[in-house]
Length: 305
Image (cartoon, rainbow, N blue to C red; front, side, top):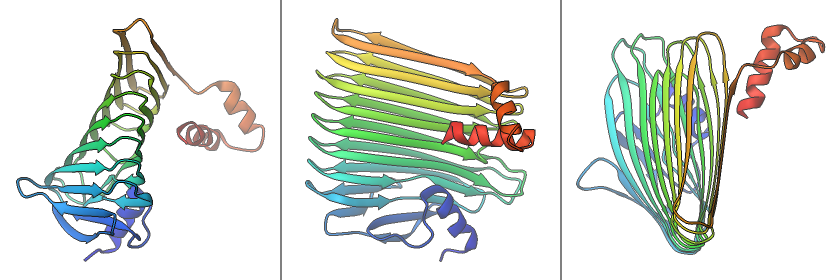
C-alpha cells in the first residue's frame, strides 16, 4: 500500500521510518489507507465530511497519535479533523503533510484541525510540511488550527515548514481559559518564488492564562513571507510574542505583531526583528576552515533549530 516515495514523505513530516506503535491514521491521496486505535485513543471516520474524530480518554498518559497526510499525485484534498483531549491526559499528536508532485498540475492539501483540550490536560502538537517532486506543478498547503484550552490545561505547538512548499497559508486561533497556557514555536524557510503567510490569533480569556509565541524564519531568493501575530488579553494574563527573520537576496518579509489589552492586569509584550546574517558570524566560522556557503548554511540551520 505504501511505496518508497510514501515512506520518504512519512519520514520527513512525521519522523516515521516504520508503522508507528500506538494510535495512528495515515491518509494518502484523499483516502485513509492505514489505521490503528488503542484502549485509550479511538479514531472515528466522520460521516458528514472527509476527516476523522480522535477521542482521547481522560487520564491517558504517555501515548501518541500520528495522523500524517501524503500526496503523491496532483489533486486537491480537503480534510476536517476534530480532537477531544480528555481531562488530565498528557499526549503527543503528530500531524503534517508531505507532497510529492511529479507533474505539471497543482497538488494541494487544505486541513482544518479543531482541538478541545479539557481541564488539566496537556497536549503537544507537531505539524510539519514538506514538498518535493521534479514536475512544474505547484505544491500548496493551507492548514487551519482552532484550539480551545480549558482551565489548567496546556497546549504546545511546534509548526515547521523548511522545504518544497510553493504556497502556504497557515491560520491558527487559540482561546485560553483560567490558568491555561500556550507555547508556540514556528520555524519557516522559503526560497525561489515561494510565498508563506502565517496568521496567529490568541485570546487570553481567563485569569492567569499565559501564552508565548516564538516565530523564526528565513527568506531566500525572491520568496515572500507575511506574519500577523495577534494577542488579546481579556483578564489578568501574561503574553509574549517574539518574531525573528533572516532576509536574503531579493526576498521580502513583513512581520506585524499586535497586542491588545482589555483588562488593566494584562501583561503583553511583542518583539520583532528582521535582518541579514551578521558578517562577524560568517567571518568567525570561515576562520575555522568553512567556506562562505558552509558557514552560511551552518548559521541558518542553527537559527531554525
